Image 1 (tube, rainbow, N blue to C red):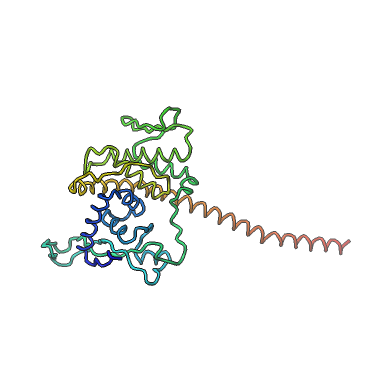
Image 2: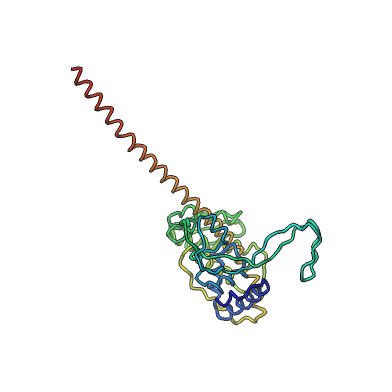
Length: 313
């Protein structure tokens, strides 16, 4: 792809900034929100870079990470270039190309060109950690429900007979959810209420007076990752000035932080529930196999005893 000609760190950063502004001007914020949900460990800069080079990517990792999961990169596949970073401890005073001086023995955050690959660019052992889908959310409803409730620290949740689907008592830190809702409706209300609590308790960043836009963005990103129904929100922000679009990047960083926190808890709950179920199934199969193995031996013993009794008669 054309974007792969960008080889230096400055090139990648410039490409990301340029494409970020263009995406907002083209009303492609939903695509960026989807990437925030799919790649919670990346940055807004890298989300844009990934979309620019592989808009169909769903799960990206470095080659070493894929190798850890017994998968290898297919031949002729080109890496997706991102901005990577790591910590280095300097053993001498150092001045970088921008004139910044770092003292000896102090940790320095180093940025460099990184390379990741989408799962479709790899092959090998089945990757069993893509458990975030609508079916698993429903199948492990209680685990997901508890994970979302625990994400809103200091708040309690009560399921009561009420008219509204949900309401938040900010003074007493209680979330009331209507009793008798369907599984999908309960999950929808929890995502809505927990995202509102987390956003409200964080410091304001970026643009102000944008209504429910931040919360709508979080809900869209989370639903994209979990395979839930996508809400039909209006994400039109191309009326912003270019300066406003740049400031909105700070809102997106807040949106990413809340999205990552919620998804991390939900995915961990689903993964634990799936592994627990797998262990229970393996134990049941092993027990059945042991039973089947021992069963014929019992029959043979009974037959010999029967024959002995006949001879003594």
